[in-house]
Length: 412
Image 1: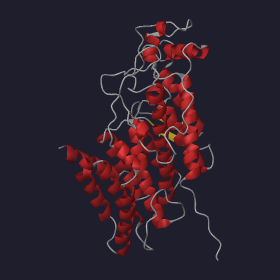
Image 2 (image 1 turned 90 degrees about the horizontal axis):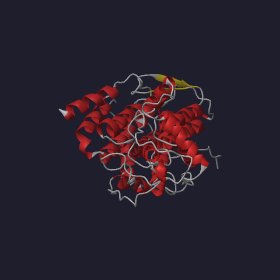
Image 3 (image 1 turned 60 degrees about the horizontal axis):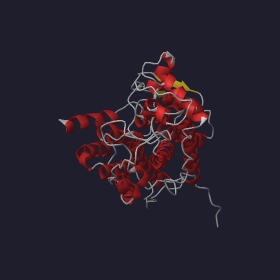
Image 4 (image 1 turned 90 degrees about the vertical axis):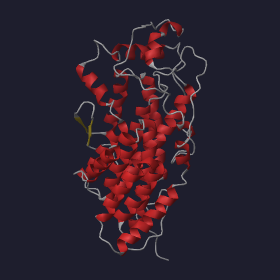
C-alpha cells in the first residue's frame, strides 16, 4: 500500500502543470517528494539532500548543453545527447543512493521519464552522460555525513543553556559534521554568539518575544499571527515548488532553471550546515525556557513567567542562530545573484495557511521571516539578525565561486 501511494504521488508530480523545463523540473519535484513527505527529513537535513540532488541535475544539464562551469562532474558527452535523459539518469542515480528504500518507486518514475524520450542515440548518449554525473556524486563527502549518527550529549544545565524542547531526540546533531557542498568548513562564517544574558539588549529581545510570541498573546495582531503561521510550513518544499513556478513564469529554459535551483539549494544547504554548526557550538536556550526561567538569568530587567508557551511547539534544536533566517537569506541572495537584482517579483504559498503572498523584493521575504519567527515564539530577534548575516555570507560565497558562466576563449 505504501509503495502504491508513493508511486501515485510521484506520477502526479511528474504530470504537474508547472513543468516547463522537462526533466529538470520533473526530477526537482520528485526529489522534493523523496526528501520530505516520503523521506520525512526535517528542514535542516532536507536542505542538504536537496542541494546534492540539484547540483547533480545542474551538472547533467550543463554537461549536455554547456555554457556554465560544472559543480562537480564534467561528463564526456556525445554531441546531440538528450538533456532530459541525462538529467533523469543523474537525479535517479543520486536519489537511489540517498534513499535506497525508495528504489522501487524511483525506478518506476525513472522508467516513466525515459519512456517519454524517443529511443535512439540521443537517448542512449544522454543516459551515458547522466550515469557519469550520478556515479561522480556517489563519493560526495556530504553523503557520508548524512548517513552518520551523532547522539546528543546534554552539557551541564543552567541559565542560557539549551535543553531539548521535546521528548524526541534533538534534530540536526549530525549537520555540524557534514562536509559543506561549497564552503571550506561548516564554521567558516560562524557568528559571534547570542547576546549576554545580563545585557539590556537581551532583556529587550526577551520582552519582545514574551509579549508577541505567546500562544494566547493579546498584543499580537491577527495579521502577525497569520504571518507567523504562514512560515511554519516546511520551508524546503515551500521554496522549491515556488521556485519552479518562478522559473515557469520567467520562461526559463532547462539549463537556466537547473542553474537557478542549484544555486538556491546549494546555498540553502550550506547555510543550514553552517547554522547548525553554530547552534550546537553555542547551545543557546529557546524563549520557552528563557522566559519560564528568567528568574535565573541574573538580569534584573527580565521577569519569569512559568506559564508561558509559544504560538506553536518549539523546534527541537538550539535557538541561536535562526535556521529559517539562515536558509531564507541564503536562498534569496542566490536568487539575487542569479537575476542580477533584488527587485524580483515573487509569490510564495503556504500549505499551513492556504494563502499565497506576493513580494516585490527578495529582501521583503527575509524581513517577514525574521518577524514571523519572533511572533511564533521560536526566536529572539538577535538570532534572526545574525542568522540573516550568516545566510547572506553563505549565499554570496556560493554565487561567487560556483555555477559561473563560461567565458568564450579567443581562437588560437
